[in-house]
Image 1 (cartoon, rainbow, N blue to C red):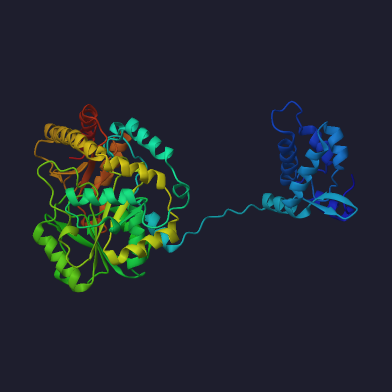
Image 2 (cartoon, rainbow, N blue to C red; image 1 turned 90 degrees about the horizontal axis):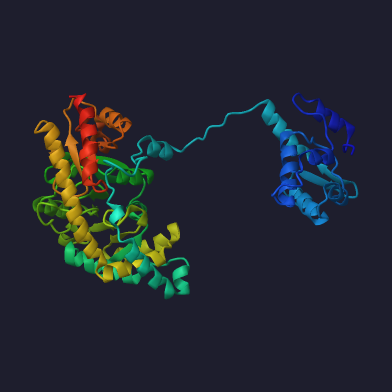
Length: 505
């Protein structure tokens, strides 16, 4: 099997590190295993491709005829024909009219050049990518004591859900299995509208509800449809890292606004420079837990109406309040159509469900529904149909009532554990609602160090300072999620955490 030209062959073989030329037949016979469970086609292809890539089969080697190689290997000729065709298609070999098929020079030469002078390549991120990953807030661990924001998923009624799902699949339509269009499943939008009117005082019709795959997607739509790059958004400080990440990735100008005991508290100077968007969690401020007063709500609504500001209301866990009934949603007080209400099933059912929703002013609904299709090509229509039945048949309300009792007991267990170990030495912040509370730390103790120390001891907490945009002015503390932690584990894990904290006091 002579090479296509002696000069090409000699130049290739003379390069340092390149093996002396082998014929393809010799090379294949050395590696082909007739007892292998691998298909002949796959095995032959892998052997020849690897030989070319690694330089054992140098450029210019002529391939034996398909008949000859098939006879030598004892396999079907069509198998060899198909392998040669695939190698030619991928550029490993080239055919000369009437002259046979040869190992291509380009692939081999590039491989050898890379081996002789390797180049270390590093991914270059965009400025937005650098900013996003430089301040990322998503936790690597999403389960166990005391991971914040995680509900008790082990008590979700999976058998009931499975029965509902079977019923939905038995009556499926072709449209439900295609791409979703518009704002989502009509039955689920109806059920959400009824639920919000009855329990949260939200003023909405089913036509105002748009379904999304999670709150982050809802925020992406808001940022892209209602703001331009460079527009300002007010964010609670401390506040939800996810809103900060999404708005920042969309090129918005992030402005932290401090939170007091009544919620978002803009200064006179800040009020003098109105934002385009304002992000608030009035029913249970995340993560500090403040309940926005009625007076503060009216002030923000009047300001938004006068200045043309969009208020994004994140009502992420209002179902779980332990001292009293929560105030109605901010959206229910809005007389000027400036509030966009965000809700999710991640805290009430389970996070991986990834179903959330927006309640929009009527004149925005069609725009958001069309953008949803343009940007994300929504699906999950069958899942939405199952969830619609879960709500409409009363199972959702039953599950909420059950879990409110469970979380209340865990909430009390954690507070008792804190009191047992620390008495009144450390404050408890945001203890009246939700699935987490904050254990305050003295200003001189770095909460990030305590959190890392606790993680090494097997307890997962989040430092309160990471929720501030201005870390130098951050209150020190630890977020302790108790929703997914059974009572005996709360007692055991907090004892471990208490030992860690004591080393810093």
